[in-house]
Image (cartoon, rainbow, N blue to C red; front, side):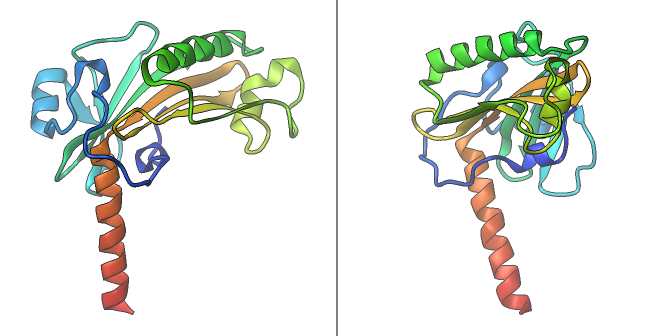
Length: 199
């Protein structure tokens, strides 16, 4: 259930030159051709900008519990972002989702350090009953479960539970490389130049 908004990213901060290793045994900067040939990558949705979303059917390392794997490929820099998704069904009270979220947060904390920030609350607006966990997460301002990590050397990692409907949602872990920060900066510069020329 990846949307175009997930390609955009969650940080445009200045990043260091190094960064952390890509997840799933992938490598930052890998080309579309390599990902297609070696890992069964295929376009996932509309790809009319320089950042293109690909579904990766056979990553080098599959992580148990996750059933969707995506890569965001830049025309110039190659693989710049990876998203892994765990779909959740039949969990009206959110117990499975919260348990998995906390387990994943613990693994990420052990590997990358404590979250830089986190937002973990439920039932602030509209959906307040115990069996409305995912409806609340789907409604803006009602609830959120997300943690953001800043690995040493640059880049960003976001862990989130997203709601769809009663008993259904998904957990995503999004990994943005240092290269992703470069793409964001280049796009901002291009937009600024275009505005300067056009106005």
